[in-house]
Amino acid sequence: MTLTLPTPDTPLKIGTRGSPLALAQAYETRERLSAAFGLSENCFDIVVIKVTGDAIQDRPLKEIGGKGLFTREIEEDLLSGKIDIAVHSMKDMPTVQPDGLILDTYLPREDVRDAFVSPALTAVADLAPGAVVGTSSLRRKAQLLNRRPDLNVVEFRGNVQTRLKKLHDGVAECTFLATAGLNRLAMEDVPATPISPDDMLPAVAQGAIGIERRTNDENTAEILAAIHHMETGQRLAAERRFLLTLDGSCETPIAGLAELEGGQLRLRGEVLRPNGSQAITGERIGAISEGANMGQELAEELLSRAGPGFFDWHGS
Image 1 (tube, rainbow, N blue to C red):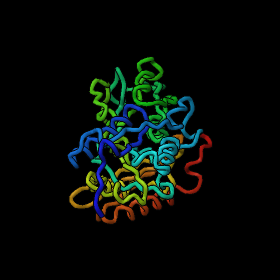
Image 2: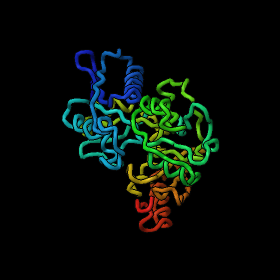
Image 3: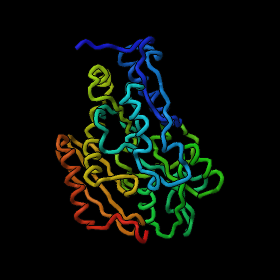
C-alpha cells in the first residue's frame, strides 16, 4: 500500500473535546505526527466537538450516563467521516468501541499519579475531622472515605480550571486532580502534591492519551503507527481488560495500574464499596505478553472475593 500523507489542501482532521486539557492532548498528537513525517502543522485540522459530558455540569456523571458522555458525539463524527481520528483521555474511554472504530494507538504515558490540591494543605492527613473535600470521581471518593470516613465529600464537576475556581471560592478545602493533566497544561503554579500509587491507586489508564480511528482506514492506521508507544499499549492492555472484566463504569469505584518492571508486567487492582466501607486489592506479576490475561484473572479474583451486591449504592 502506498502511504498518502495529509497536505494543507487535504488535512488530517483531528477530533477532540474543547476543554483546555483536551486541546493540549490534540496539539500533542498533531506535534508528534508533524515531527514523524516532517509535515507542517497546517496539514492537520483540530476539530472541536461539543460533547454531552461537557455540556451538563450540574449533575453527577452516574446520573446522566457515565463515560460515554465524553465520547459519543466524537465517535459519531468519526464514523460519519467528519473527522479522521479522535484524541481521547483514556481514563474517559469505555472498554468497548462502537462497531467500525478501533483504539490501537497510544502516546507515551504521562505521570499516573493523583494530586492532592489545596491552597493551604499538602496531604489528606492534614485535613481536620469533618473537612469538606470536593471530587466528582467515585473512585477517589471511595478511596478517601475508606481511609478517612470522617471527611465530608461534595460533588465537584467541571474541567481543571472550573474545579480550581471552586476551590478558590471556598466550596471545599481540597480536591484531587490527575498530575498528568496539570503537567500537560503546564500548571506549575497550582498547589498540588502528587500522591504515591501505594496510597491512592489511580484510575485505569490515567495519564494515557489514546487515538481512535475507523477500522477500515488502513492509510490512517499506517500514519498513526509512526507515533504509537508500545510500552503504554502493553500496560493499557492489562488495565483495560481488568476494567472490562469488572464491567467498570463511572458508577463503580475501580482503580488499576500496570507497570513494566525488569521485563515483566506488574498489575495492581482495587475495587471499593461506593461508600468506602470496604476495599479489596490484589496484584499479578507475569510476562508482558500475558497482560490482558492477567487483567482478566485479577478482575475475576477481586469479583469472587467481593461477592454479590458489593457495588450496590444502598447505604452509601
